[in-house]
Picture 1 (cartoon, rainbow, N blue to C red):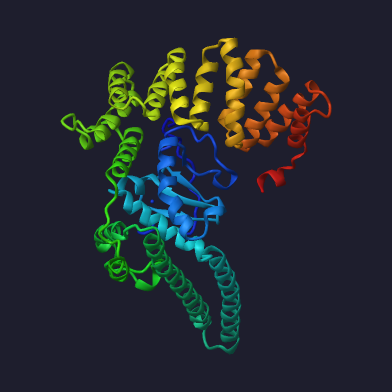
Picture 2: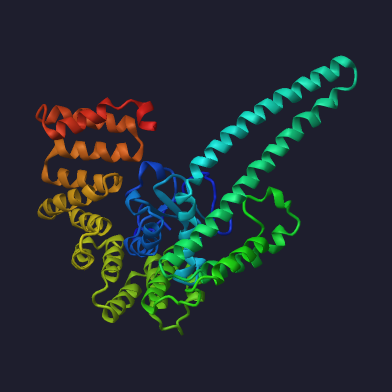
Length: 462
């Protein structure tokens, strides 16, 4: 898991979560371009859990081959949504607020309903139609206003003519979105039933959120809600959920523990220490509580106190790679990269080749300022980048490793790739140009550098 991330501008999108609107635990090391600018959380443990939640649902929806990825956003509000056919976005707030795995699985089932129903494409078409209709209505209203002024019947005659059609278009569009939400609920329950999972979590989550929203929505115009009003939506969902033969099926205890560990990890990395210790008091000796307190202790300057706590976690579960990862990260960020190498090596071995942990081990090796360690880091980082090809932090570490070895050509190329993936095209082209002068003409590395030099700003933005 990476250090709590820097909050970036949150991109607007069509919110299609159960309740409306919503850490980077590790640096956002592998942001794909579609997620550029979003406050991404990257963490192997959490991503693996969410993949286990989503995979059966996606398979039931016929989307197993579509390479749909769950992306976690550092946002404390409860929200989840889709922006394209390959990503389900979910806020850290939703992950923490969901008390059971089944609740998050229900959210994924709902979002998968949007993907399977092709709702994004249909909504874009509807928006295009609404935009055209709005322009026509506006021109008609302006014409009426001009005609009224010329006839002497009053210059305000065109205002209702302008506003009324636009209001009708807006109501029609939002009604269409509400229909999509209802369809996604039905599809979600269908996918849960097909995978022999309960829709109880989805229902209970909606009920809980409904109670929280009642006061805020009591005076709202129901036609201006992008989702059906909570009581209406909960009532419809309850009928669907209780009709499933798996309604009373509970989450396996081992899955519930993984879920609780995820929530503890999010709290430990993202919350203030006083909040963490209030949620997980010293009297709570459960593994999730100990996990949250150990993270909060190291994150807020208490490495000496945190290490015994982390060692206690390792003693409790000696084959848990994420406890070794946590120890390595704490030591690395505490200025002890040499000591971080052993636990990170152990984490890499236990986790069976996970790019984010590999990158962290590479970072620790390079931070020792030892040429032999830098040589070891190069293949490690290159293998990680083969699986996470758009990871600017990994390219930056690779550039330093090559620099330690004295391979300035490859160092320039890796630094250029890091800049390119950060969106800094000017720096990327300058570094790539310099790399070309140091590389054999026509070699694979020279071609890569030439590709970066040849990219035009407009193409890079696209």
